[in-house]
Length: 375
Ligand code: NAD
Image 1 (cartoon, helix red, strand yellow):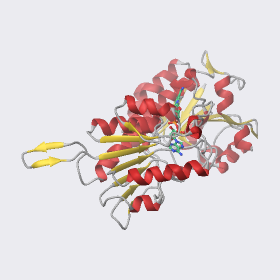
Image 2 (cartoon, rainbow, N blue to C red):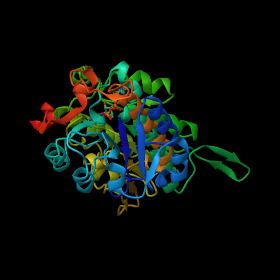
Image 3 (cartoon, rainbow, N blue to C red):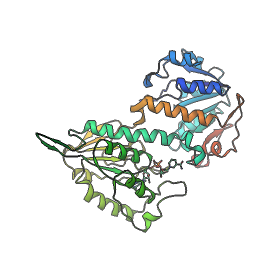
């Protein structure tokens, strides 16, 4: 089986879908690997390291894709890549398939068998290929680093001869994978941390990290977790109660990190313009959900907005890409595990009835086969 890895072509994408380590693992599975020159640059991986690992480095896209059975990407392939695919080729990538219908349509038209890594189910067996977790964890870490950078004060309490520096009060909204790592990171830096979520399971996890849990814990909260472990969209009534609680709490915070997402829907608005206006000058908000529409009113993708009252709202849309070398290393390992489901004795054998592959396949044989995306 011939595997191709090409340079990321989407704006601002610094990660890559293979590393020298995973090239070796793919070769061990019986594959040959071609890598387009420049693929690893954003992750500080020179072309020569891929060659040393056994890949053949190709100078351009068409050479890298020639004869490829499988194309590995971080973000969905662009039109130039899709048009260079051979019919029936397998594509594995984050497709953003709920939103990016044009790419799904192009992959369908090219007869590709395209898998969206964001659809890999969150089951125990699939943890090793769970790119949402591997990337969200790094995003949560980096969100705190970005907040610390934008904040004009320190995070830890420091008692010095010249007096005491107060600890930063940090509020993490959404305590899933990214939020929990944000809590842990803010605590390591010495912040006093509170956190909220709508899933009851989050409470114990937040507390186990040494943060205080703050939430509207009514009957709806008790039923907010779906069977898949995700949050439901909350009722208008719940949202109003949540907004009141946020209003009382946020005014005392120095740093707010928001991470709340609901699969297949726009991100819930958790921080209103009035909440932001109530915060102290110099406070920092990082909106990790900015690409999904944002949790914070006034956040803008890839901008740091400073409000009239001096609050900074950080909206980097590709937070894992700001810690690209680690993000690529983990993502690429996730892909090797995923490919292990379809490479047997060096040959490609794609069983679309296999549970994980079935959940992740979006296009096959000239059709959009993923029900959610099709509907
Ligand atoms: P996510 O990225 O979809 O959402 C982030 C967080 O935002 C979630 O905790 C969610 O409950 C929260 N949220 C949504 N709406 C909210 C609102 N209105 N107010 C406040 N918070 C809100 O979630 P995720 O980080 O991908 O993970 C969700 C859950 O799945 C977690 O419990 C995680 O531990 C679990 N998980 C399980 C596995 C597994 O293998 N079993 C793998 C990964 C994640």
